[in-house]
Length: 199
Image 1 (cartoon, rainbow, N blue to C red):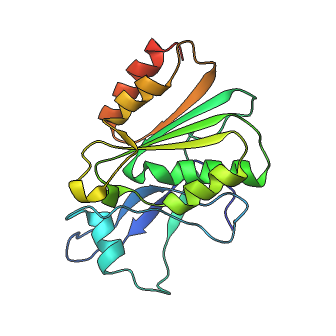
Image 2 (cartoon, one colour):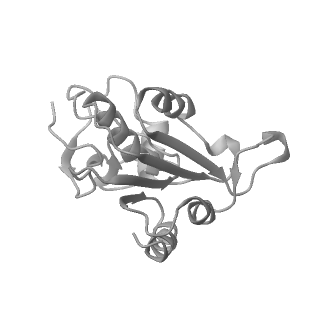
């Protein structure tokens, strides 16, 4: 069992193998809610030649013992009644999923809008889970956006960079808190939009 707050991360030990001659640790956000203390879920995006993900996808077999430590991080839901903006891209989905699952289990009723950015439809994942949360979590709205949808995607949802979508949807003087998880460039661009909107 591990006690953690939804949104925090762990470090997973990657033992030496042909791509790394020494033991290293890689950080991964927990995607499961804290109530599932006997089960830790990670959402790992495969990175070409990534030392951690190559080990996980190509070498880590079922029932192989793993070593991890944690939890770490200050990224978790603050206890207040303010509205919430979540913005993520790619593997940034993991801590958001944990936060939303925790809110659902603890029946926390707050207005939540979740903006998730991806390039094309193939880059979207956990869509059924997010749609189910929209049905069960009061005042939750999930807004996925594709920056480069392909013709075969037949996408009718939001398009453009997630910052553009955030700018279009967020009213001025937004009375809430924002939680961001993604690349540094995306986060910096989102911060500029949020500050412009008065967050």
